[in-house]
Length: 450
Image (tube, rainbow, N blue to C red):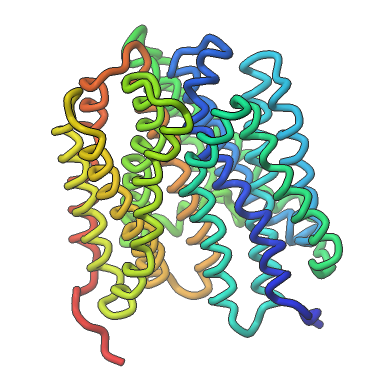
C-alpha cells in the first residue's frame, strides 16, 4: 500500500534540495577552473579533467544508483547520496594534490547522481495527483541551480577562494538530510540482485570514454594513437557485449531499432557539446584574457544562463500549441546565429556586444532543452520512457565531456581571441548538424488541434 504524503510541498522541497546538488556542482566549477589551475600548477587540459570526471562518474553512476534504489529502497539511497556528497565536500578543500581533488569530484558526482533516481522513484510512487506539477517544480530546482551556478561560484570564490564551492553544499545537504529523515516515506526495498548491475558494461564504457578524451587532448602535441585504439577496441567490445545483456548499461538494441530517437540523442549530445564549450569556456576566457575577477565573471555569465531560464516558459507554450519541432528549430537557429556572432567578437568589442551574443546563446539553450525532451517522449512508447530518459541524460553527459576535451585541446597552450574563435568555428560546424537534424525530425510545425 502506498503511504500517503501529508505535506506534498515539503516532500518536494526535500527532494529538490538534494537533486539540485548535481547540476549546482557541475556548473560552479566553471568559474573556479582558473584559480585551481594556479593552485595546482595545471595546464587547462589538466584542469578540464575536473569537468570530465564529474560527468563521466555521473553517466556511469546514475543508472547503477537507480537499480540500487529499487533494491535497498529510495529513502536509504537518497540519504546515502547526501552522505557521499557531504564526505566529498569535506575532503575536497583539503586535497593535497590534483589527483585527490579529482577523486573528490568523482565521489561528489556519484553521491549527487544517487539523489535524482531515488528522488524520482519516490515522486512517481507517492505523488499520484499533480505528478506533472511536482516534476516541473523539481526541474526548476535543477535548471535554476545549473544556470546560476557560475554566478554563485563567482561570488564565493571572490570572497573565500575555490574551497568555498564545496563548502556551500552543506546548507543544502544538512537541510535535505534532516527533512529526509522525517519527511520521506520508508518505501519497501526489493530483492538484492547484484547481477542486475552491468559492471562489465560500465567498465567498458568508462574505458572507451577515457580513451577518446586522452586521444583528443593529445592532438596538439604527441598524438596518443594507443588511446584511439583503446577507444575503438573498448567501444566495439562494449557494443557486442551490451546487445547480449538482459539488463544492459546502455540499451544498444533499442538504439538500433528506433532511428528517430537515436538521432535525437545525437542531436542532444551535439547541442550540449556546443553549449558547454561556451558555459565552461567563457569564464576562463573572461578571467585569463579579459582579466575580469571571479565575481564580475559570475555576473557576466548571467547573460548566458539567465536568458535560458527566462525563455523556457515561452518555449513550453510554443510546444503546447505547435509541438516540439518548431521550438527545436528555433533553438537550433539561435545556437547557429549566436555562434556566428561570436566570430565577430574581437579585442576591441565592447562588453555589451559579448552580453548580447551570450543572451542569444542562452535563449537557444532554453528552447533546446525543453523541446528536445518533449521530442524524445513523442517518439518513444510509454513503457520505454524510463530507459529513454536515462539515455537522454547519458547523451547530455557525453556532450559535456566532449566539450571539456575540445576546450582542453584549444585552450591548453595559449588563450586569446583567436583560440576563442577556433572553438566557435568548430562549434559552428556542429550547429549546422544540429539545425539539419532539427529540420529532419518527423513532425510538422502546425497548430495542434484541441
